[in-house]
Image (cartoon, rainbow, N blue to C red; front, side):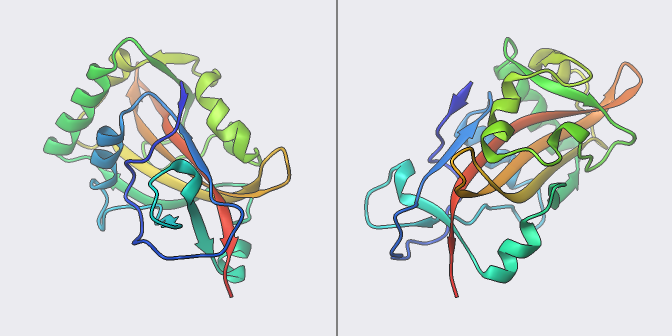
Length: 204
């Protein structure tokens, strides 16, 4: 399920001197479908990665952050970067995107409300594990995208979360992750749809 995505909304090309410029993503959605999620937010969400040089490759992108931004994002509980209540057209887009990947599955967690919910399993994990989490089971088990599509309706929630954390090698990573929360069998349930991690370049 883990894959590399180059179709994200990227900040304009800015030359930066850095040996760290890598990012990776995991999840069942296509680049086009992720971009469809991003424009559901007002304003549209972007991880705002910076491209180094002229070659378009996953090794040429990183997240530029000031020391203050690194400090504010270095938290155990991922921060809500953007959240949106689905309208009719957004619900239709998301339902179609999930049905297009109907045979795939993602982990789900029982939530206390339909909104921007952070499951306990997301708290304090490393950048590597956040992406690997897409292959794991939540306390609601693994849910097929076909079943999740059946929960999508106006009033549901999509959210994106951000955090800075180290990976297993100790490198700082900027993490962003997309979720959907809706009522499944009468219980609010949050699913992780896509997650990414990029190298952090600290700028002063």
